[in-house]
Structure formats: C-alpha cells, structure tokens
Amino acid sequence: MTGIDSARVTLRDVATRAEVSLATASKVMNGRADVRDLTRSRVTAAARELGYEARRREGGRPAVSLMIVFRDLTSPYSLHVLDGAVRAAARAGVDLHIALDGDHESLGRTALSRPWLKEVAARGIQGVIAVTRPVDARLARWSAEAGVPVIAVDPETTGDSSLVTISSTNLDGGRAAAEHLLGLGHRRIGVVGGRSASVPARQRLQGYRSALEHAGIPFDRELVRGGSFANEAGRTAAGQLLDLPDPPTAIFAVADSLAVGVLRAARDRGLSVPDRLSVIGFDDTLVATWSNPQLTTMRQPLSSMGQVAVERAAALAADPGRFAMPFKLETRLVVRESTAPPPAR
Image (cartoon, rainbow, N blue to C red; front, side, top):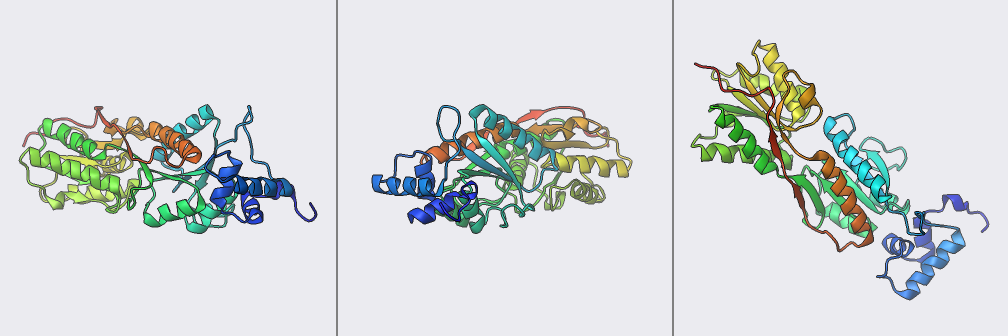
C-alpha cells in the first residue's frame, strides 16, 4: 500500500475508498446487519486495502467508542455526571473520550457542529453525549447525516424530539423545593433562576410557581432574578432580592452553585442563615455539604444521568432504533441546615 500510513487511516478514508457514507462504513465495521451484502463487501475490501482495522474488545466484538462533551469540567455538576459516565463505560467495556467546548486543537472544529460530527465519525466515534448543551433540529439532522447518535444530558434548550434526552424531574423538584419553604411558614420566597434560556431552570421556576398557586400566593415577578449559573451571579441576584424594600425570607436557588452565591450575599449583609434567611438549592453536589451552613437542596441523580447516557449511547450505536425516547430521573428533597421557619416580625 504505497504512500499510505496504515496507522493513520480513518473510517472516513475507508468510506471514501468504498464510495459510501460514513454512517454506512461505520455500520459495516461494527457488524451491523442492515447493510446490503454488495455494500458490505465493498467496505470490507476498502478497509483491507487501506489496512484499517476497527478496534475490538476481548472476544472479537467491536469496541464501542463514545465521546462526552462538556462546557467545562470546573463545576461539581459536571464532575458528578462524568463520574457516572466513566463508571458505566468501564463496566460496559466502552471507550469514552472527553471533549470540552474550548478544546478545538485535536479536531479543529467547534463541538457539536456539522463538521465536528463528521470528524468524530471519521475517527470511529459511534455516539456523542452532550451535557447541558442546546439541542435542535439542525443537530438532529447533522447527527443522522454523520451516523453518530447524540444523547443530550440536561439540554439547555430542546427543539427536536428525535434526540434522546436525559434529565431529572425538574418541574416536580422545583415544586417540592417551594413546598418545603411554604411548609416552614415562608410566604415571600425569592428565586435565583440561572439562565433564562435554560430549560431545566425554566422548569424549576414553573414548579415554584405551581406550588405558590396551590398555596394561594400570587406570583411576584420582582422576586425572580438571575442570569447565569455562576456562583457570582447567584451572589449578585440574591443581593438584588435582599436589598428590596420588602425582601424575601427565603430564597430558592435553581442550582447549588447559585445557592452558595446566595449564602455569600446573606453574609455580606450580616444575615444569619437560616435564622434570618432560608436558602434551598438544587443538584446536591459536593458544595452542598462543603458550604456553611450545609445546604438543604433538591437532589438530582447526576451520576446516574451520566451512567444512563453511556448505556443509551452504546445501545443506539448498536441499533439506532432503540431507546429513542426521553428519560427523566427522580429528584428528592434533602434537608440540611440552611432552611428554618421565617423570623418573627
């Protein structure tokens, strides 16, 4: 094979030589049955000529290779999801690759773009897990073109039901958080809400509104602030709430990262938590027990979300018709030290 380094041959090279799509080449190299015999012969012949060999597990079965994409790995949320994904991949014998939004050096493409998906398909990646990313009809179309299924974990936006989504019961969790505060006697409850475009944040706010409505308490738009999920954004938003002429006696932060910012805003103003202000978060990440006081929060099974994502992505890589439905995992209230009845007035 003159002039070709077989160690660098990719699945794209095989597809080009056989004059088939990347998706078809991937199906052949992974032993899928839904390929015509003539096409299968052409692809295997091209692979043999180029010296391409799909990586295989012990026992001769093709290895499943997945990629998980994060905005960053600086948040406890991401680390919990990654932990579950890594554990599931190890149990299943799956090769799991990690990519970050800002890491374009290895692929030379923006993560989850059309060229990026084509590139990962050429590298033999058989499924992509996108964590807290917007998903829409374009991504679904690009995924189908590349023959690489995309699983969306806690998608920021959703615009296409053909992609598998994995999330928690955000609306029920938001309702339970507000009901906990209402049950303690709070009637003026603020919300630090994260990004307005975020589907999970909007669902948690919707749950909060549902609990207020059921309790006969009018929704007050003035009590909802926020703009991102960063700790400092939580501090700023909580400061705006606490500086109101009639401040809330409790604040529901739609993420633990925001709740820590709320605690800092309370400390800035000399307000004791929970004696003067109750605070409840959402996620139950490590910061919930590291904070002082420890956070009451809604636990969502982040590690399980990572685990399910790997399992579903591996299943879809083997059979694109399987598990094409959303998955919702249950949230539950974890009461710690940051909530109490409101102060007497």
